[in-house]
Amino acid sequence: MELPEITHFEHGIIQVKIAMSYPLRWVNSYIIVGDHTWSVIDPGPRSAENEAAWHTVLNTLELHVDQLESIILTHHHPDHYGLAGWLQAQSHAPVYMSARSLAEARLAWGEGNTAAQDLITFYKIHGMPSEITNELPEHLQSFVTQVLPQPEVSIITPEQPFLIAGHSWLPIQTSGHAAGHISFYQADWKAIICGDAVLPQISPNISLIPNSDPEPLKSYVEGLRVLGQYEVEWAYPGHRRPFNGFRERTVKLLDHHEQRLDAMTERIRTQPANGYDVCMSIFNSKLTLHQLRFAMSETLAHLEELIRRGIAHKYQQDGIWIYAV
Image (cartoon, rainbow, N blue to C red; front, side, top):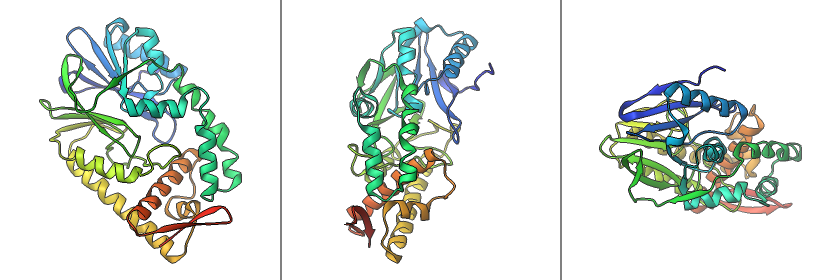
């Protein structure tokens, strides 16, 4: 197989590109090498291709699985969480994530969960047509194999120093993209491994979904302001390439969401509308089903933020929620 792209950075931080679905195409896993051990952050989604990729990476880097100290997860989404259980089975290493992130994983992937049906019902009452919601069960089921087997999880305590390959990192918990998301800051190196909390070039998805954070955009904005206070020279994101200008990027993301709120305000000022119709007016209509799911939940996150700010309200019409200024 073709070798996954491996890039070495300072302080023993190694970026490994692990394959995932279009349009992102890869997720960044990070290996941090210590004197006699190594740790991995966000090993990627499980697939036969990615299992083989990890064997190739370890052989190339001359790392032994029995020296794996820890498997660390920024959040519970399958492109970050997926291979954790498989890698734990190979190594017997502990898997770490925040308590809130673990709760979200159980909500999404736990035995007997109703997350898929809850999401479909949620989209229906916000106006998504049945020809689309009828396609969602198969689509959502396709992610289950990416997260099996489930790992045994140990809990990271936010704001308490956390050792990774012999170095102390500060876990910073924020939400919005995913409830309980953890970024890791190394003060001496002025480095942050920020998962999907801050991405270069693209905006992290902010989703309103059932039984999770009821105010995800508010949570995300608050988290960006916290993260922007840290002195960062290099940021290591979950997607795209490591970058500098971290603080400036947090400001641009804040501006982006204010502009999107303004655009949605004008849309429902012109004519009250359900969430699906607002989504179609704001986002590209030629979305894949996967992209449409993200766009729909992001639209609803913004519309609910408009209600929280007192700009909009909603009412039911024929069983569908309608948003208006």
